[in-house]
Image (cartoon, rainbow over all chains, first blue to last red; front, side):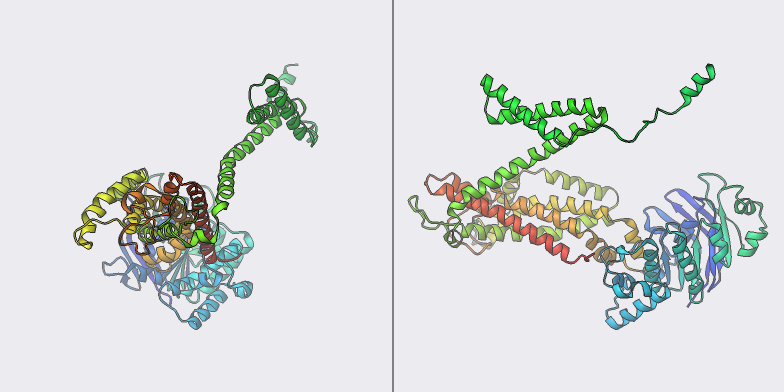
Length: 258
Length: 362
């Protein structure tokens, strides 16, 4: 299920602005990797270029090599929708589809990609909702609108929606930043469980969270405003948080900068 | 001494000792209103300068002044301004609703006279100036067919055009389309009628009619389409722009293709607003007289075929009956006007209910 993500010399632009430069990084299957760094350092840009969501914005483009188990996802022959089905994404703010019920939200990815059979959809919905630790809370109101849930439940609904299409890699862009501590804890627990099946890459501003949930941590930074973001250090989480090899990482982690 | 002055200056503005404040009693505002009305009546009738309308207008002004003075004296400046502006806003609402109520009242009271079964079953065929009967069946049929065909043409075209502008169009071409849609919004209905007369009735229709130009309900539908299209495009465009981008991204991130995202996520989210825009366009088209007169020609007889020969419409019927010399014609005009308003109202309510049916109950 889970696959290896390999980035070499990845550079991403917004129009003429270079947002990240020469990112080299390998993410092993079935691990949680955290991307940390100050605002504007390109963590999210890098994350979005992994499932080709970066190019959705007008004028945005990516250079370099990004492979999933040795398949180049930026190859000319690659179908973007296939890439995104393989690499799911959870966004900062929960974004359930407002016109759909909870059930329809969870199976949206399957249904909109042509799965019609009701029994398959029902099984998939239950499985995804159970994996997202949401089943017990919503099983009696699957027909109610997804937008009627609380923020934390909505975010878990979005996670269920993402894993219902059975991706290999799950990207999370600050998934807890709009949530309270209890919902955050629920989602962090979820990440531990999901690690068995998926490769998870998470962008977070919360360093305790990075330390709690991730196996490996990548620290991104910029020299000054307007410069492209660069990967400063990438290592085991424990090493990054206890004994980083670059001075800048230490400064950031101890709160002396950023 | 100096220190006290300095400390005094740096202190924030004096806090009130209590959060309570003096309030006007509840009967103050109605009392001022009654007093204003009485004073106004005395002034107007005493000096004999006008009638009841002037009394009300003057009373409103006196009420505002009196309310401000009273509130200013008892409650203070902020509260006085609040009360005056609230009163102004309420008056503006009344002023805006007044013509609407007046129109509906006039229509109902004058239209009731011929609101009988006969009116909806007969046409004006063979109805002379001395006949009290006669109805608008042919006109209702014409309006339904013409507006129906125009809607069938413009709704898909307009929504697709708006989708292009919002989701696909980039650069100068999309900008040009937006610009020309804006220009189209300002086309007078007579111009659209002339365009269809010159293009469809005189040039194209002879091909289908043994070489002779022919009026038809379809030509009227074409002219109405020209008028409806910009309204639908612009309102749909605004509604699509209101759909939050994260919803589209959420669908893309599930591997859903762009066209399907638009069809299944973006359009349903914007649907209620799109329906409102379409209904506005339909209401405008149903009320147009000039283009129908120009290219469908009107007519007294029932013509069920929109593609051949003259057809009438409700608004055209109103125009013709209102100008008719027969003493029975004005009543028919009022009833037809009432029918037209009721038709648009019913269509609007039906469309709103349909749009809501798909949305989930909370």
